[in-house]
Length: 255
Image 1 (spheres, rainbow, N blue to C red):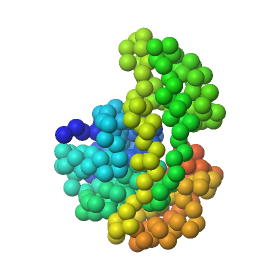
Image 2: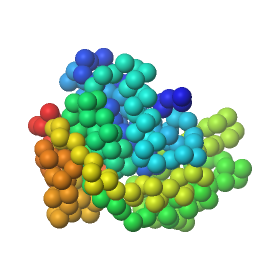
Image 3: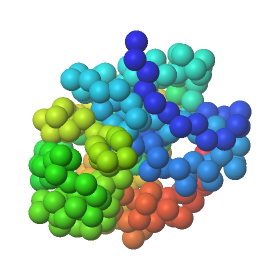
């Protein structure tokens, strides 16, 4: 059994597991984690398979990622935790809560619905796949190459966090791009109709994001009868980074 990598922040007696989005990593959440740790949480920032410092595998889908999380809880003797996921991580969190409700104290889902989404990452994936680290020797060069595919500077800055030094002279990508570039269909998959979680659930959506639409609220209630939906103002899909104060306040007012 391979275990996902996690950074644990805080020594509280309440466990909070955070699952990042597609092409992200647990490190993206360190600032929030420090704040939650100060409130008495022990925060587990998970790197999901094929991301961050976790293992690579050709098997990649929500079932596999939910099993990774179950293994993590089991090995670390966590009987129950609060579960938070953003985007892809939110889909993992939703499925896990439905499959293993006894393991989930409460559920927080950031800017994703339990519906299917069409593939929409291909230009980003093509850009990452085009990075040849036999030629590229600096982050600046990587940014210039990525800019041919990804025009938005904040998006590129987010993606470039995945670059690291394999050796002092060799850059590399923490993402398993060979697998992830073909994963769009898996990432967009919906929750199956029979799945439901009857525990306390919070959905957060960015006011400027189209990932959760008004007509999705009935779907949220179908799968998560106790779901509450809160809109984060002045924020798009990366709501936790674009308006971190409002994001944190919405959660603090809920749990």
